[in-house]
Image (cartoon, rainbow, N blue to C red; front, side, top):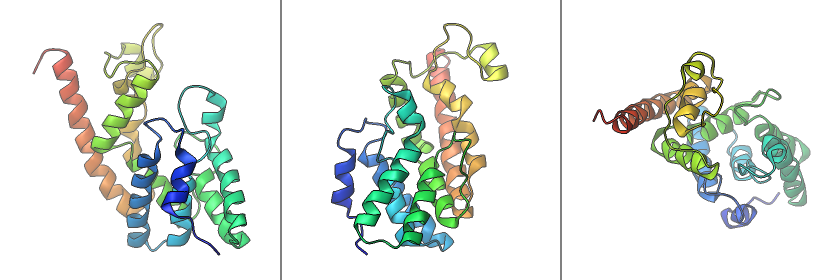
Length: 215
């Protein structure tokens, strides 16, 4: 049973965008290791899943269907990689479950194992805190959207944008990111998410005030 190396994994992300590049993968890998050690999860499964979780179709823009299904295509790719390295079938399935269940907006497979919960938490922690703010602004820029735009009353009330309203990074914070900390599965993940959430809340309050000329 051969393990995946960091350098081997780097090659799978050569064409990734700045939001889902290998730096993101490495941050998730380190966080997943930390959470796995604290929670008692299988490190072998968690490390492989972290390195493979965004390996196919994760970039924003372009083919939206591919982005929406990247957790499935990445899990399929993981099966091919790990089988070629002689991994036993049960370990391959464990890694594939982690990858299929890591997507925040997926209505499908949920993290059932501790290893899947660790990967889910590690991946979501990377959209919070200072890194999360930077990634969310970069994602907005890649999509041609502003870092900040005043949300409409309709958006604040329903989460649905008014006609012509941009989806700024602040909209993404209101729509998704402020809810992430409540979705953590592990105790260790919840502790980290609380601190990162508090920082991000302060950041967007400051950004809003600066845009309005209040500070």
